[in-house]
Image 1: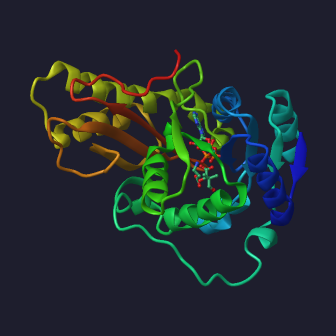
Image 2: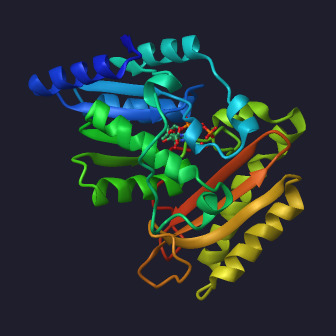
Amino acid sequence: MIRINTIKQMREKSKEFHQNGQSIGFVATMGYLHEGHLQLVNNARKENDIVVVSIFVNPLQFNQTSDLTSYPKDLERDAELLEAAGVDIVFHPTVEEMYPKQSVIQMSLLARQDVLCGASRPGHFEGVLKVLSKLFIIIQPTKTYFGLKDAQQVAVVDALIEDLNYDITLVPIPTERESDGLAMSSRNVRLSAAERKEAPNIYQALKAGQHFIQSNESWSRDQVIDHVKHRLQERVSAEIDYVDCLTYPDLLPLIKESDSIIIAVAVHYKEARLIDNLILNQSGEEIYRGEE
Ligand SMILES: Nc1ncnc2c1ncn2[C@@H]1O[C@H](COP(=O)(O)OP(=O)(O)OP(=O)(O)O)[C@@H](O)[C@H]1O
Ligand SMILES: CC(C)(CO)[C@@H](O)C(=O)[O-]
Ligand code: BAL
């Protein structure tokens, strides 16, 4: 496995791979890796000649300084995990390398952003768009792998690739969960023991929303939201940031019979904001399902 921290060297390598006719699978991360990240890597490993993983905590997408400064880091452990997973290149540029001067170009979204995390983390998706546009240009991936825990991010990357004609295939990967159902996240390490114990109820609240859809022939968006909220309020001490039920991937509130649906939740514990979701068809069956 090669470690690269300059854009110049990364570009040269990507060029070389393409000249050799090798496909590149790319996984973008902010490090502090867990099984969820490794699922993306394993899929990339199966489907490509070369696997590139980036580790870059992108300051542009953090709207709270404390969240950025306390973001967990362990590059050496990450490198060991990636080497064991058969990764060819880890790209870990510094902030100065990625953003050497005051930016002139800012990217924004005209849809898919004024709800969920886009609404509660102003500027977040602008930052994600900017860094991913740069990473896609530098790395030139054939396929790129994103986790559905961050379902809105998948919807935004889908729009980025489509709208800007990137010649990249987006591969969404189901959410990897702990054995008690909690969605894996780098931020889980910031939970206290008591918070960690009750946090699987976030997933259970989503499942309750799914059950509500499955057991009611006609249901409304508001009813689903209320049902999930109620379940969260009963069993989770965290502050609710949002609960919503929208079409997926367009993230619109008016749900038609043919639409896929997302039920999405974000909660704030003392030191960690956690998100989770389920993506369902109209009968309430999960569309992207991980292994249980
Ligand atoms: N539990 C998971 N299952 C599948 N993919 C995941 C999971 N957690 C993160 N990913 C994916 O890994 C990629 C990198 O995410 P990131 O480095 O932000 O990790 P993270 O654990 O989501 O961190 P955080 O929860 O703190 O935002 C993203 O595509 C993300 O959706
Ligand atoms: C895709 C990403 C690495 C961009 O910084 C980040 O948003 C993440 O980790 O999901
Ligand atoms: N996993 C999405 C990146 C973030 O929370 O900033």
